[in-house]
Image 1 (cartoon, rainbow, N blue to C red):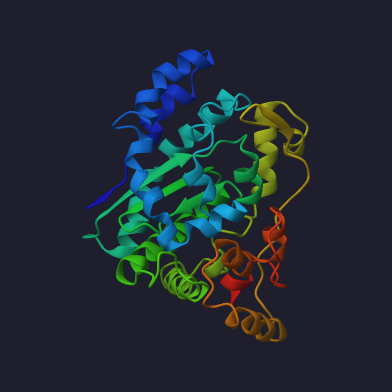
Image 2: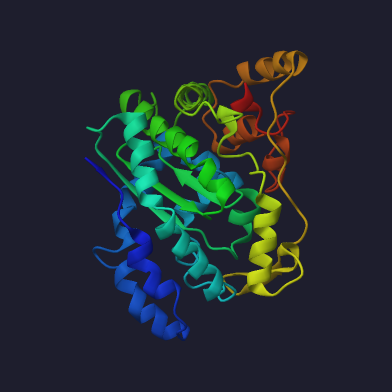
Length: 315
């Protein structure tokens, strides 16, 4: 059975009202930390994520990392989150039927008899890493039977939602059928999984311009989307927005992630040679450098592999 709980309706009363932090915590805690709270429900995703590549995402804080990190309760307790911005996102989840879209995408990718639960939440617009480095979309489906995602429901992100869901659940199906030989997957095993996911995206979502990069490419309307968020916050630009990460306040700034692009013939030969020499690696930081490239690995001081952005996925 495919189950997509309507989390927007369930959580909107907490994200769209103004309460003192202490009162908000008391109200929301059973829905986040209690026995039936969201953190308890997603625990299997976090416990088994290392077997399907979550650790590589974690070391560079990209891809599915933000959804799984649940920073400040997915933004609920972020002091710089604007209620007006959250209200817009929650309303879009309802008006655009995000749970229905996710359900349809899962069914198309896996079939109506699939056994999967998908938890999809509106993204925190004041979460710098999520909104800048993940373009408001972060999801992880590597744990068979589960999908966890955060989505800023702009038109551009909704347009790539089907392809992204297809990638995530195809990875989950792959790891269910082909678990890694060891406690962690090798780079080669992860490349094989991503190849299958990209092929499935290309098959089911022919409108996606780069099937291997559906979760990484910047939507065409993203600059306008960030301008809209800035207007909701009353700041001149999204770069001027203050963000709060566990009491540390920093401005978003002008840093932006590299764009994915196809490899030309010479680049492909070089990338293939570099990656072939590392296919048996299981270190999350080494895998991340080969999948996501030097610019992204360098953010947190990991050794570079001499590769362009998203090289492993492009290969």
